[in-house]
Amino acid sequence: MIASVAVVGHQNNPLYLQSFTNANDALKLHHIVHCSLDVIDERVNNPKRSVSTLNESYLGLLYPTESYKVYGYLSNTKAKFLVVTTDLDVKDADIRSFFRRFHAAYVDAVSNPFHVPEKKIVSRTFAQRVSGIVKAFAAGTNG
Amino acid sequence: MAPLVPKSGDAIFASIDRVNAELFTLTYGAMVRQLLTDLEEVDVVNKQLDQMGYNIGVRLIDEFLAKSNVSRCVDFKETADVIAKVGLKMFLGVTASVSNWDPEGSSFSLVLDDNPLVDFVELPDTFQGLHYCNILSGVIRGALEMVSMKTEITWIRDMLHGDDAYELRVKLLKQIPEEYPYKDDE
Image 1 (cartoon, rainbow over the protein chains, first blue to last red):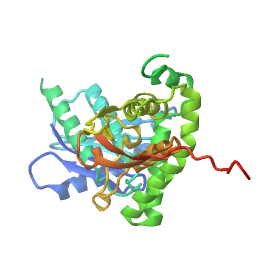
Image 2: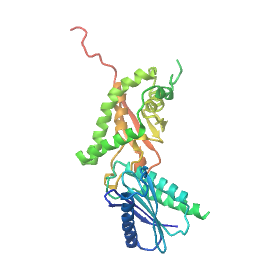
Image 3: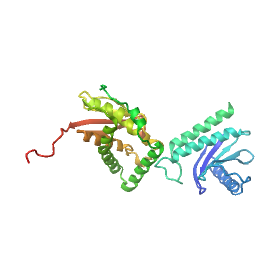
Image 4: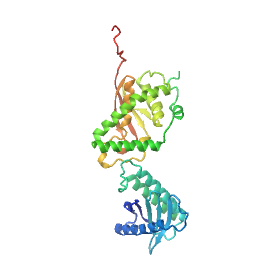
């Protein structure tokens, strides 16, 4: 199940952090996200294939550790979406569709004229949509 | 001629030039945002939006009458229907419904379920008094004034404040008869 999601801007400033476990591990979450950013930078700067010029690069598994895995997704405005999950086996297609929906919710939140770019996302609708997407994902993988 | 609207708004909407809805929404949002930055007070911004709408309305009515070929409205009820079904459809792409007529027939409610101006918008807490779509009330007021009806328009329900639809109350204050500006014997 998904432990948390995060959105980071192109200057590596955090835009949205949400954890879905009931433990108060906000600090640990920050730490994980921070470490993942390094992995993303590394992947972006040294592409493994020379033809990795896809828009909307789905970065896949960034690094697995003892109890969780982190998946990343980079939009072409360098907005990074990170998902920390405690599932042991997650299908690639599920995560991809999760990121697509997450990206769509992000785009709608950013189109709000009252949202200041590169500041934190305070939209309540965005939070609700993200919770909805996470719940749907959990239901999808369990069912 | 047909009793109500001779050409439904859909046909005219399909035949005129259209613009991308997101571009329209984002442009309007940017404009409101800039007004808020310049004027800072929510009430002043509301008044300014209404004034801008009024300026648009007095010019829009001519285009509307030219493109839509509606016949002269017999009474205020017909005016209300024409605004809701033909006018709003032609310019905003949505139809509204007319309801809550008061007993004298001089004021009605225009209810919009869908409003392209407010896609993606969420009002922050500091701007809760803002009537984001106030430009619409100005447009209707300006247009009706050019066809000799002085009206007063207020917002009853606003989805950005948590209601389920947009409701505008249009009240006819008086009908101004056409005045001939020149004296005949001079």
